[in-house]
Image (cartoon, rainbow, N blue to C red; front, side):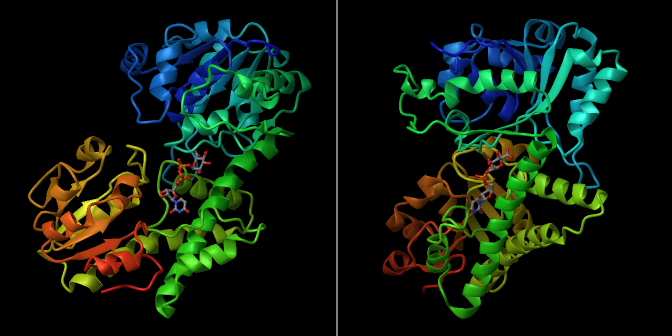
Length: 460
Ligand code: UGA
């Protein structure tokens, strides 16, 4: 093995922290993963991943209590490692900007145990200038300036494909204003950038493998911070753009799929992230677009484009509810089958889920709903308990029993492989309103459905 193991601490065992921790171990580094939630730490030590994510159970099984240790003791972790990755939450505050109080608390706690040189790494998505605030917090808490560097190493993983994205990234971005710190980050990622990791025979069974090692882009710390916000905002912009185009297609009886294909073949535009739907959700895009807009505001920069991206995203959900109304006439008293609660397929995450917002809107309109999701029902129950007008179904067909129409709100693969004959028999009326374009309208027409989707001509 060419690359050398670097002792790493990862603070925060949420999506980014936990995935980073087990993936660093997979790359050969000894890792201490710190969380102040004792119950989480106990669960992780016991092998419970807490989140639904491909390959995570395998990696946790391989390395827990061995190359990855879980602890609540940040002091010990600080003393034992060379690099400390901060991967705690940066939730949205009331004003739209990122709430950095967890990051500050971690910085202050690190300061108490920092006696030899460490690289402090921002892994959470944070606004530009956060590195300077972290430095200031450390210094105010008595740490001498030569004992640390703060670098930005944004993470671009997606939920559902987090482990594969981490180990096979398009690029690795390291924003460092010191050579020493940049070199340590270079060593940490060497197994990927040298290609060494991809030649290993004991890789994760079933996982994709790339032949090309990812490029590592070295930038200033501030540039790296901005790269993360700008990337997420740009992806959200792509989605809002195609959603607006899909509305134009509906108004003209054109087909957004053909339009997106025609646009995407231009290599400058690219085919990805041009799937129209019911708007973007999740724990990142809504929060990051708002935070980036707020950064621009504070700097006196007009970036109203981002407000428009948000506006289209809100309208897209309302538009879907109008579409349901246009198919069913009155909504009050209608019984609806809903497939999908998670913010996208392949995850049990319901944060900022457009599906759940739409369920809320429909319940407010007086509909009664039977909902099914392969993974997200338990989490949804916490925020939307079963009641008079809401029931959780055991499967897709059970949700359809006696419903006036079927709504598809999340792009789970299994929702694109339904037994259409059985669905048709279960529904009172053969009406499907698909917010994710999972079916070919011609096929739906053959099966006798009235089928409304996004940006494509309706079939009856
Ligand atoms: C997103 C980014 O894709 C990651 O690169 C980034 O690291 C992550 O945020 C983050 O900042 O942590 P994620 O939120 O997991 O990842 O989900 P995406 O797959 O990007 O989907 C976000 C939302 O956009 C979903 O609601 C999805 O349904 C929607 N979407 C996506 C569309 O409506 N159309 C598309 O073409 C693509």
